[in-house]
Length: 287
Ligand code: PAF
Image 1: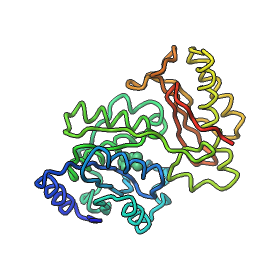
Image 2: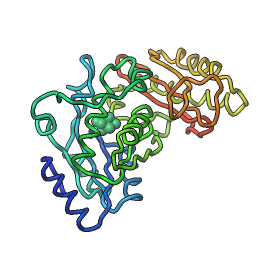
Image 3: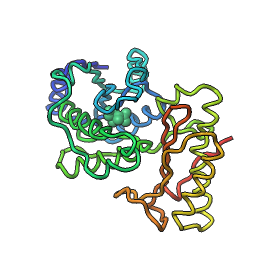
Image 4: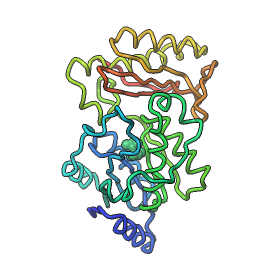
């Protein structure tokens, strides 16, 4: 496993691979790797000869009250996990390496798609995400980049960035990985103590309820939204939004179709969790 802390080393690794005729896939992460990240590595392996994983807790995407300081950092464990999964190279820069002059002057404007859903409560978040992803593309020069669908709005915005800015990277999304009880895997789940984790199951339960209603023929998106809200209200959690949206435009729909996506954000004692499910898809049963 090659481990690069310097941008120049990551670039040299990319150039060497390209010269050898090897295609590269990048899996951008903020570390604290779990099975969801490892599934992205497996997907990357399917689509390219060389898999590069980046680990960088990007300060630019955290707002004032966010969890930047307590976000889990465990580089040594992450490197072991990456090695065990057959990753070829890890790019793990410091903040000073990525932002030597502090906040960059030029950033990526994510446009109106970033103002709704998670963007409504996290101003500047997607600007920070797209800016660091654009930098990672420039540094690691991947042919393909793999992102998890749990951050659905993020995946849509990154796909749009690559398309609208003609970045030479194919953006691939991979399905959510869940614990057996239905909880979508997230590095932030480790903030949840026992009883809070049980409350967190409301998110996947609400999505399952919407799926059940859709399977029974309900096509009124308002009714599906209400069904989700009702389950969330029973769960002693603070719902930020529960929406049914078009998978590409993220516009709220009134008619729910198989290409609509149910999206939820909620807080449990301050811990912010998100989850989503495309209508028609099966979610594992919470026990
Ligand atoms: O999804 C994440 O972990 C981050 O938002 C990403 C894409 C690595 C950018 O920092």
